[in-house]
Amino acid sequence: MSLTPLQMDQVRTKVSYSEVDLPYNGYMDILAKVTRLSGNILRGQLQKYSTQQNIEFNDDYVQELETAADQKFLELQSSLDVKKVAQENWDQSNSETVRNMEEKIQDVMPQLEDIKDSLQSRTSRVRELYDSVSKVNNELEVLLEGRTSLTASKSQWEKELGAELTEKLIGQNYLRKTGSNGEEKYRVYDNFTKGPNELRHTNKAIKIDIERLSEELGTYKNKWLKDAGIFSQMTSALRDEMSKRDLDLQQAEDEDEEMEDDDEPEDEPEDDESEDENMLEEEQVGETAEQAEEGSEEQGEEPIEEEAETKGSQKEIDSESTPGS
Image (cartoon, rainbow, N blue to C red; front, top):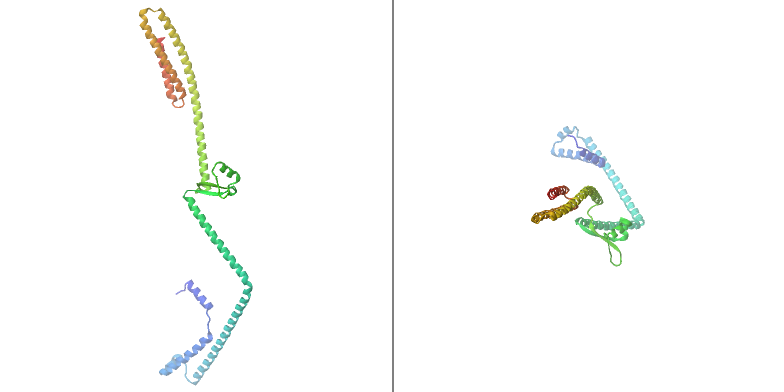
């Protein structure tokens, strides 16, 4: 079964930092041999043990075990003494290091105190900054809810917007003067939720709409002026025609008067009828002239209908004036 990378790393770490105590292990091995030999002797299994271990139990073997045990004991004792001396040296070194640190720290203590005060001051500033950011966030939340007011001194407005724009806004009464305790401040009340890019886009769209409406207005104005010129010419022609009609009617009236003087008394009813017809024609001519003048004033609304009415009026005048003449 192969080891995982994590297990291999753990094995390497254990091997690198573990300490193998050889004297102690050697002494424990010799004690284990003596213990096993003593146990087999007490149980009466010495022959079996000798066969399994391939040893010959005699005085030489016992002497060899004693010598090995004494040697391993001395090695272990020497190792313990070395470790004891090493620990004492380590403790002494640590004590000296601590003493040196205590002596040196007296010189460094003022600097540490200054560093402590500096850290406390920075911590206080960070807390104040956090409080300021929290207030700004609260203000932004209020701004997002709708219209709100913003008050600052004139110098601050000029610093942010420029002197020219500030004076322009004050002149337009967008920035209103306010203040307390003799301090001059200017206040604005508006919706600050829209950013500069959005406002620029809105302003651009409004300018495009204004230009489009201006072009349409100019087009309609030119068209109206053109139609007005045409109808002015038509009105002038109609007035000339009406003047001619008035002259013809006047001549007809004069002829009727002469005929009345020449006719006999029995023909008077017929003269009265002709006079009534002439008066009716005059009234119709007057109405036609009034309609023509009204048509010239309303020519921008229904030019086609006015032209048709004018032509109809002319035809009626022609048809009515023909019998009278």
